[in-house]
Length: 203
Image (cartoon, rainbow, N blue to C red):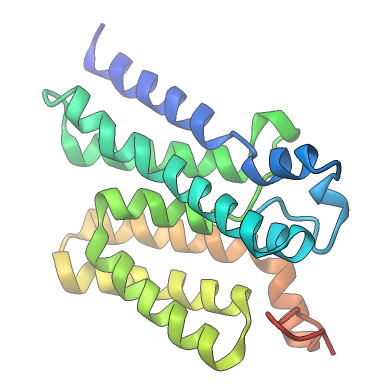
């Protein structure tokens, strides 16, 4: 198999791993379709609102784990491949799997936890900068969506600041743009003042 074949193979496996709809499956085990409750999203925040903190935290951890696993493991299984290229490919594929899962007609989550897990294995420094911003914004406003958007916007400049690598900065810029795009309905609700806050009812 050529190197291109290996890259494609890892991308396919990473997509399938990312496509496992953790929140949806957890809801089904509890007898509900999470897509019909709350925001209709299959991610950890909506699971937490619908099923409680325990299931929400579990889904968050599992979504992060499925992002981390292929990005961490692939370079160690094939050290002959370009590590950075391989990690970019697996990172993109696993996030795409979560965001557009083939098991739910290519409708999935927003990719924040899965992106965090992938970046933990690839660019932990920029991820920690984004996490710090997430904690501050969430602590002030109690909006998970706003905190996630601000964290996504932080990671590209943090990547440039820490690495001075144009390709990695462009890569994280694309990831941030996708994350913000997936939050477009949340942005509309934030502007309208109807977005849910953790611990509070919407206006």
